[in-house]
Length: 206
Image (tube, rainbow, N blue to C red):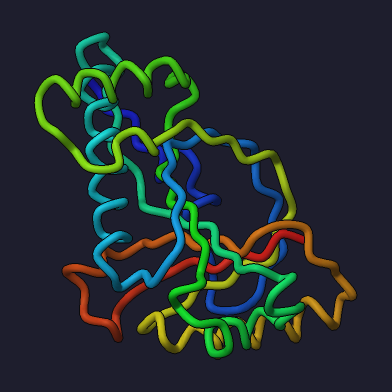
């Protein structure tokens, strides 16, 4: 049985250059979990664990049906309370907004044949096997087709503001407006990869 690899089928989605690019992104569906707080904290790690548990349960369920797939890269949508903090420029937000106030939605892209009912079925099976934390917070999530400015960031997460500043200059020079939440795709596993070698796609909807 051949496994569906979304990173190969949607190569443009999982590829970026080290310079700003304009890209049209297709609509896609995900398994997702949302939270608030420091991404280096325990809650964030627990949310990742719950998300991956459901993603792999979905994979094994689909494999039994003859539709195996490779679990895709972790992604995240990020924002903060703009009423409280104001319209902080994107390259300054990581420096000015306390990490405890960062809002996130973690995502793993799914094949089109996986539906919301499949996610609920996978969660139920997991509950019968093990008492996973935050399982009830894992849900289906859709992103519509959209246009973005993107850029590949190589290095630690703490140095992202440098790449974001380059993206902001590009966006401002083209007079684009903000049209959605900051989006990141983690091409590297941060738990196993040295910080200086991390590869992250940064996207800003326009």
